Image (cartoon, rainbow, N blue to C red; front, side, top):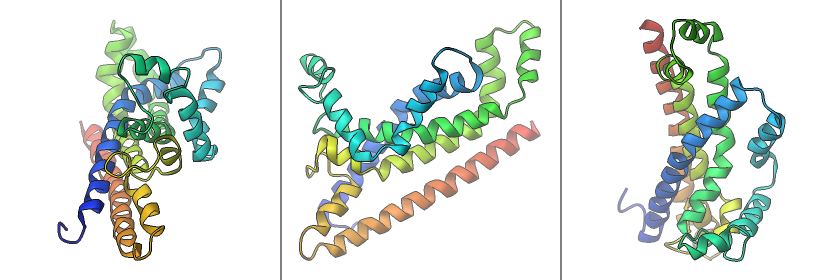
Length: 231
């Protein structure tokens, strides 16, 4: 593999893994909280929140990237303030992670929400009648039962982050070694004569990672579900 991929291709793969890891890790707590809120709570604006969460799925990715640029760019209403304290997203790998997290967030939330909705609420109510507090019921009862959904959502979000292109290139451009992930590297290689071979290699890497993520999510979810069911 080391000899098969060149230095520039390896940099794109390494950066994609870095971006996807941090995008997934940073969004997981928010995804779990949002999924639980949508599945269990009733509050004003719930449907609006649900639509907002799923908006990246239906908006053109370029639109999402442009909105990120308007918000988190150096002259954006939030980006200007963050830049004053040393936090910069635009044209940095951190911005690529932010874009990937937002694009992958709906998949994570949906998988976790479905697993929460599948939990029998009578079990949670039984735990509450025995004197357990709501946080304790969630930690000891709900969380173990929704673990397959959390694993599936996390892995699918990671795979989606690895393949994110439109929002990323709009928000952070395509800077070699800084923001050039696998999808943007494929795009760059296809723009130059003789770059088709490098592009094809990265396409194969993308296919392997995506397929591996889907299969891994299925295997882990089934194993965890079987272990919980046999407990």
